[in-house]
Amino acid sequence: MDDLVSAFAYTAAERQAVYRVISERRDMRRFVPGSVVADEVLARLLHAAHAAPSVGLMQPWRFIRITDDALRKDIHALVDEERTQTAHALGDRAEEFLALKVEGILECAELLVVALCDNRDVHIFGRRTLPQMDLASVSCAIQNLWLAARSEGLGMGWVSLFDPQRLAALLQMPSDAQPVAVLCLGPVPEFPQRPALELDGWAVARPLPEFVWENRWARA
Image (cartoon, rainbow, N blue to C red; front, side, top):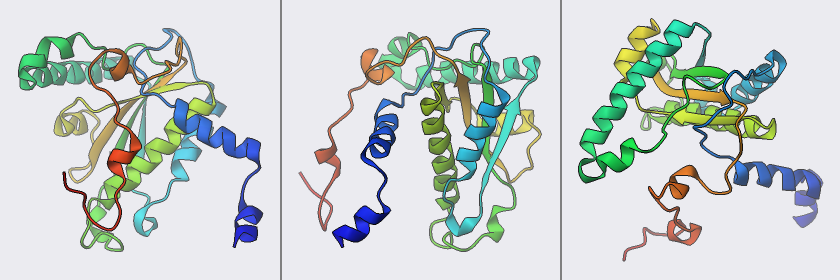
């Protein structure tokens, strides 16, 4: 069995690169203003996203590249409005939250909106009891894009602060399609060694052993 594993394994250097890009991926909020992403690089990133696994091979992801400056500002306004609403919902942590930089929509080189496709109910394979697997599939595509971007030296930030119905209307989506993410993409001034929310004192990542159990749900 070990021989079979080694026959399909990548070289040590290739494996190290895979694990490195996973460990150094960051949710970025700060971008270099006025920068660009070359068309061929963006194409590679989208191909990486499109190579993601999907339940029943339904490929539920849709990517909308925002190139209109006025539309970018409209999306920013939606996000900024939800930022205020989120702060209100956080109660005692409202001011702390408002001090965080939570998006880079106006500064990033490329802005993408990722959505769930329309007409998803026709896809039954793998979704009869778990219909949310379409969302899981889209998340895999976003992660592929994120890791590919990091390998290209580009930062990416996933923004989820928006009203999905209003964003869908703004982008003229079909009624049964649903926006999932606003992605900020582009060159960044640096990649921090730790997640930004840790550096900002918002949260602390917990270690892996707290999340891995055997056979049954662990109880305290």
